[in-house]
Image (tube, rainbow, N blue to C red; front, side, top):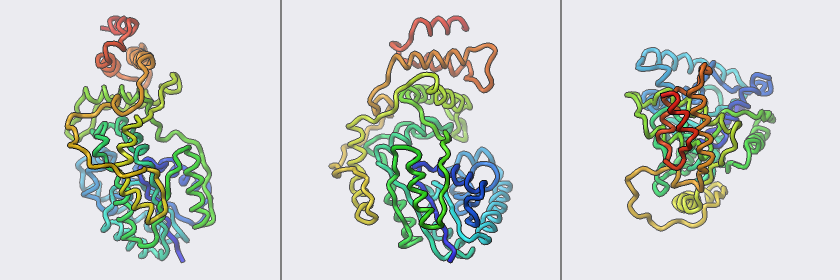
Length: 378
């Protein structure tokens, strides 16, 4: 009996690392006759999702918008070729692993049912659906870090009181389409290796195989100081008509991530009261998840109803425990030194980005050395 194992996320639960491990296992022949359909190039998750909601999801996937800008014919041509590729592999396989976090946060019940019908048409009769869920407070901090790194216009720091991690709704969608086949597992957040160990237990039980854990920095995070600088920058620029920020945003995010190797910085930690608020607001859903699937997120008791949410935007400073002003000065100096370097390194920070970082620093974080550097190039 052909079995399909669907790994559906949620976001920020080690998906990128697992995809890399699965791709390496496929390339090295570890998967044998078990298919892991992965087309050439990137956009793996985005393409999988658009097979079942192309028009509706195209606008929610900026990577697709950039690749197929306002060219419906070319976009539909890609979808037809991709569908043919995926299901040709699935029909030939003895089993299949399909992995995409977009399945969790973008799929409706109708889309999940359409996927099931297609899998049954390819000969699959047994299904396992794996949904990883993590502590809502940890998820909030991780998704905030990701939003600040993105080059599209996203909410930067969401209101902790109204923030929603819709893990129960995601479980409901997939339970309805695959009744009795959904496994909900708590994401082991201590290290990247642990999610490999956990997922390998599922793989061994399903197909008798395991994928190697290959350490890879595919989705690194910003430091607390990097988050703060990224928010200062994003607040100072406006997106274009496609909600995309200037390309400088990607260069700045890359610089801030890479700077951690050159300059020790503060690891982001959510303030205790913020973490308690987020966990309490998710307590009802977490308790329901525990009663159904035995997964304990450790969120504690449900919170009383919140007062009206504030309308002014939140800042990084309000949600994290500390931002070190001395590290801010050193990090800004590194940014300006790269931005003003002559000759300019390849893919270095533009001059305007480095100077903008300086201009938006709090006055107390501006050292004389930084001022002198800025004056020397103006």
